[in-house]
Image 1 (cartoon, helix red, strand yellow):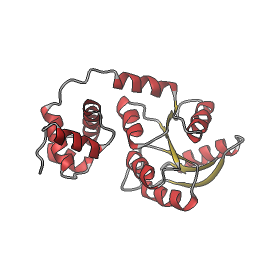
Image 2 (cartoon, helix red, strand yellow):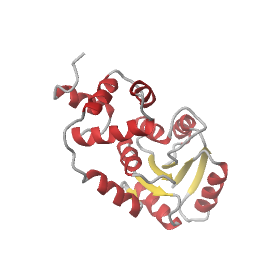
Image 3 (cartoon, helix red, strand yellow):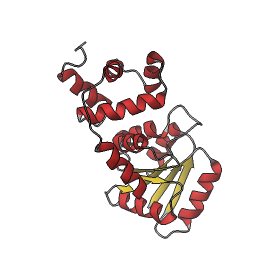
Length: 208
């Protein structure tokens, strides 16, 4: 399995390379700390798997957006998230973006290897803790769309980015991401476009 490493810490990438090089069945074919560069490398190298960090401070996009773009332009390449962040929102957003696995950096190496192999075989490789967080997220009561969520949906329909929405509503980007996860769940949508389409169909936002 050919793996591309995406993490903005050089030491972390070196450790992952050593770990994977020592495990039969894996070959690290490239690495970067930049989300946009990860897309270019994936198109050039055609790896089977991308091991993606969520927080990428070296470039213009984070791991969630890089995962979303990779799923669109290189669907044969499976993205497995490896991160130190394990919130319900992070797990839900990663899977909604197209990730085929979610593993925590604090977990054992065998969990990482198992997630990569599962993703490569067409499944979804999840750390036990990530599964618990996701189950907790999706089993929460949905309830009606709130006024604040309507505000977010209206800005989504205008094509605004998470950062732009956060600025317009005087909220943090993390809060906007949390609102998006709840909106997706309440509307039964998998992504931004589907959420806007469903919200428009229900008359929650204007047709224009």
